[in-house]
Every structure is written in structure tokens, then in C-alpha cells.
Length: 201
Image 1 (cartoon, rainbow, N blue to C red):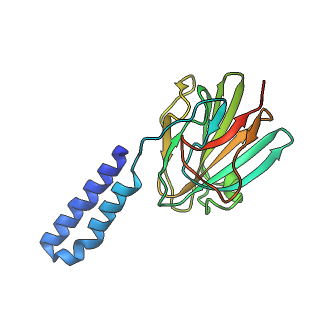
Image 2: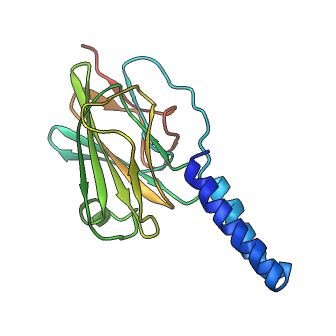
């Protein structure tokens, strides 16, 4: 459980208890339901991290695009709805080379324009002779991007590195040394789904 979920749930529960005491329990029901949803939304299950020369998904959700971003760069876009686990994980092991946060709009995250216009946090990881960049993108409801690491920090493949609250999107950028292992329409899980496999070296 992400601690934020406990804080939100406690707040809604306290407000619900107060409203039930001042009026009637029925009127407090929406607040208790909101508390229960927060506990569900901020769940953080353990995941089995695959071994080998692979990049894992940084997010739970549905793959909405696997497309060439440039002649040498492949983009995999993952859309997270409000029912997905929203904890983000490192796609590869290595060093956090750069973190760049940019303010922006809050368009529906599944739209391609969101990648360019929405508030976002871009992270570049470098390790074992490769680099993978992923972008946490805020959505229509998601207004808060969280990233726990700083430039220079070392991370393990599948390690928890942040989250985006209440529906959002993550784009992953892979160089020519990677072969994508997913297709649009597939569902992936952060840390355990293989997103790409390293080409033989």
C-alpha cells in the first residue's frame, strides 16, 4: 500500500464519520465509499521481476501505441485507467542520468497530443551500455506526478520509482538495440511484463 492511500482514506473516513454523526449514516456513505476506493487505488502488490536482457514495463495498463518516434527510436505508450495499479517501476537497471519535470495541460492521457502538451516528468536511465527513457504523463484527472529518485541514483530493474495519481500514461523510448515484445491492445504489468528484449551483442 502506498502511504498516500492511507492518508486519503483516513481523511474521507473522518469526514464520513463526522457527517454521519451530524446528519444520518446514509448521507456519509459516499465518503466511506471514497475511502474504500482510495485503499484500492493505492495498492502496491509485489511483482516477480524477470531476468535476462529485457526491459520491463514501468506501468500497469493497456499498450495504446508501439511506433517509431524517429529512425532510431521506438516509443511504447501505456495508458493507465483509474482501476490500474499506479506505482511506476524502473524498466532497466542502471543510473538515473536525468530527470526533467515540465508543467503543461491536462488533456485526456490516451490522446497523442497529451505526450507533447500535458504536464510530464521525463526520466533517462543508463546502464549496461544502453539507455531507456520513460515519460510519466499526467492526464485529465491525474494532476500529481511523483518520482522518488534523483539524478545519480542507482536503480534495479523493476524497482519502484514513483507513481501518477488517478489515471494517466507512461511513454517508453527504446533505442535500436531493443526489440519490442508487445503490441497495441495488450495489457502489461509494471515490473513483471517484458516490454522489450535486448538484441544479441
